[in-house]
Length: 560
DNA sequence: TATAACAGCGCC
DNA sequence: AGGGCGCTGTTATA
Image (cartoon, rainbow, N blue to C red; front, top):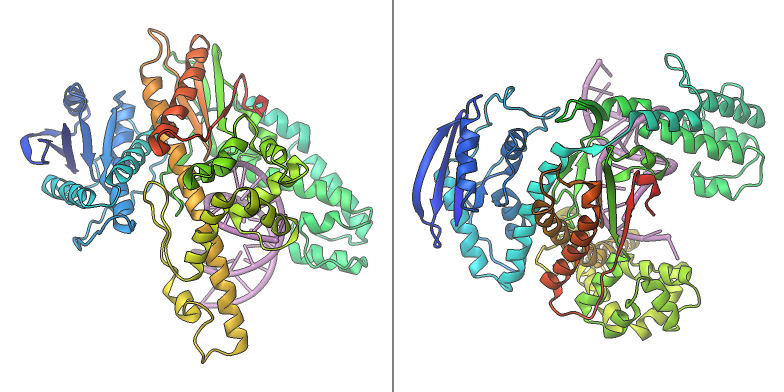
């Protein structure tokens, strides 16, 4: 059963739909401070419906603030984005469906500061859009896969809101101590921290550049050249090649300067807030905004705080609450395994039997070492053409012909200006008009001069690398999303009277659950069960294994 | 003064 | 070396 919902200002309307998507009955309620409207939704939730609404983002945070979690939904905005771009179905409707991007509101919403829900599409429009999406689905190629993708995407919308509401446990004390250990005491008003000051003085001395600001790339490049070093850039990689006493302090400076600007005290003050928990005890929480399908491939993005780039240096500041543990789980070598399953490459599936697929490649005699195996595999996924990785490709192709053929085909499609589609049905965007008229398919129109034609070929190859990676990265994102959704459902039914286990973090192929200590064992089991379920949902009875690396820790720094 | 582009580097 | 990102400070441009 579905319940369609719409909102406008302080009015919230709902309608129950029958199996054909027709309205059975409907009602309305006022969005008021007393939470009565939440009780209405809670009452309907008893029937375990699939909620259908235009956009989860304006509504779900308010429900979470009121303590109401809903089991499942159909997020029309996310689902339309998939359907309207998928090559597995034919989306012809021209009806504009504008759900303006809602600006992320600062801080956790509460019932008290509930102003009005920004006006969305009317209930009639919601019902009509749902009907359109159902019709397109019914006529789609492989509708089961697309349905799964839409369900996973919608579950993701709920998870994203819950991740923000629950937050990531964060110790300001540990973070500050770590910053002081690495950077020294913070500088007063604009000055650099102790250790950075020392390093700047050393660098200036060694380069005979008393006024050098090493944060300035042009200044630094000039100073290095003036000191007789023939560098083209100030990149870490290039600096490492140099034989000069300034290299050591300079690399340390760059590393620490990066830590200071990206995740220093300013970051801590901006993104980690201390708030009382349900029992009134103050707890630090990091609450990034997750953006479902924020990346073209279907991966998530985040807004603010750089949540998907938490450097290892500071992960020890992610500390479980007293009486809790972090269950950290990541899918080992997810993308190569996804490729093996998609392509039905039995040899590669066998190589992946066991925890380490790269060791399997070595055992198959493809390469001599694990390091080479990794380079070869990533080269196949990313489209390396030269260097060590390019050299290893023929060997990979000989042993795993089907897997390599799949990515090669995706690359050729992209090079020719075509689009590719993931396992569940997310299609890559067409190349931009501007790029492609210049490329014109293969070598470019005859009226292009030699330089333009070379440029066109280069762009075609670039796009081929994108489509090559798209099918694998995108399908891996689908597996991860199904895993996440299944885990969410399992955590739901866990535990008894005590505090619940909550998802705390999601990073492409990794999840962190913040769990009360007595529940950790059950959470570990749930994580494994959900992974097995995801594999079955996508690939049925595949021979490819998707092992997890799971750690139960007190702080994130202890994982991996 | 505000914004865009670039270089560089963190994560997967 | 090769795919996908976000964020920062600096520099260039409007």
